[in-house]
Image: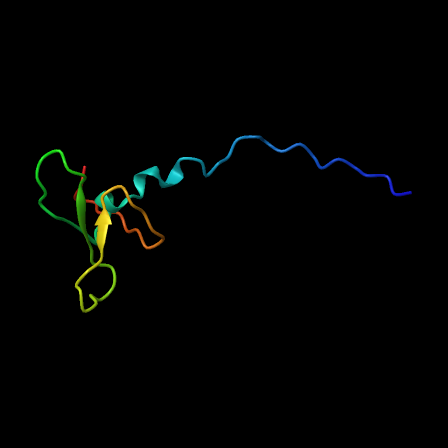
Amino acid sequence: MCKQTEAPMMDERDMWQGRSEGMRCHSCIQYVDKEVPQGQMRIGRCRRHAPTMSGFPVVFASDRCGDHKLNERIS
């Protein structure tokens, strides 16, 4: 019979937890806000890739993707 050994205890903290919170569309240099009536969800256009026949994709300000590039002009 094989004796099973326990894996060494690792730190339980997730070092990546919450890291992407600051990487949402509203803080990306490719994001352009769209004016919407007050009280509605904030939306805009993602200009990361070339537009399609229907224009640039519409995204929520709270969305995120793997192409995020921080806009340093936003506080």
